Length: 572
Image (cartoon, rainbow, N blue to C red; front, side, top):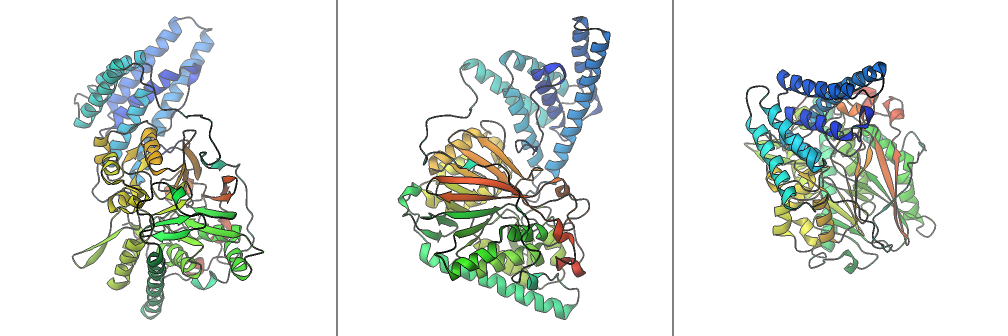
């Protein structure tokens, strides 16, 4: 995914001299060259020759003097090298993304979606040229691979469809006259929240890494086991009251205002008074990021103050979008332990959603992770009894997967596949369907209108386009979706802004000097972000803010760094 629009390879609107379509053609050719997993030297040479032919035309036109033409040639060559490097980085980032084990279709499917997006963004005349160039590029290395042939046929199909229906247009942002209830969440400018403290009595006792000493480790495991049981008990009590309340509800407006309940795996919040909702994206073992969020917002103290005197203190809630484990060094003994403690201590104010990393299964007498790589389980499993791992597996199965805050949906991944939505959607209770829940933990947005169903079926981590997002949100009667799941270097991004529908992406793990991350982690390129939703009678406003994790690189302010981690970190 790029920094700009949650994509694996970024696009640019123009290049040297402003030849925007040429830029898109070059990026299309580079993407096609990579779609079979091998960028052959002859394919790169073909693209170099194509660029040379463009430069010859520019020089033959006599535009500018010799110096100007030389400058333009150098600029284009630099641009090609830059785009090639960006593509390599994008493919490497896709390879770093979490998938189901043995899911080789993930990277080709994402690259195909990218190529389709670039192709469909070209004018018809340029599409003809693009098809000729793609076909020639495919033969440049002397062998047309099945992925290349399949992509070419797909591009040809889009071109033929456009010829049959030349009026078809790309879905763009709609700007109808909307009432306050119809508008998606408003976005405020990024703010900075200072740290209000460097420690907290709720967190200090939790900051203990797993010990290599068996007796001490046994005591730690016993406490974590009981914490997992207590967390499941919270959800069980909430479900005893809320299960079934979404049955037959096709519009959230039919849920009484003031309601707050958990219907199976879906939290519903319909506030009647102003409330601040702090939203935290993927944490991935970055305990310092979690601690910073809590102390920048003064969350725990504000909840305690409201519990003491609700007439003087406003309501505040905390939503986690999932992915507490893996990648970072403090998964089970840092992030997950603290998140569960917050839930148990403040069950009316803390909402813990399941991410795709919270997906374990049991077979052959062992507990396995459903994702790859899975560093947290690989690091812990040699040292704790199977009963502890089984407790985590059951805990994850009990985790809710969505929060409905009026017409804003908070979820880990995105929308379900087209066929799943058509088959299983009946009402808002359909968000509890196992297939929808699973797919909404894994899907990713693509900068296209529509990802073909066959591409969606090719990988568990599939893509969806603008039109598919629009269709799902209209069917559910929702305006805004806030999701995590994808690493974005800026930490926060507007993925789709369709006027009456909005998709936001949030990522809270990362930091270039974050000691919670391995030295070679790609997350060091991320500026971790969180956001606050201000909900009142006038609607909702979301304000993103950077996470000030650096203070918790210190042993003085982070007990997890005082002696650990002591168990070996394993790449699962």
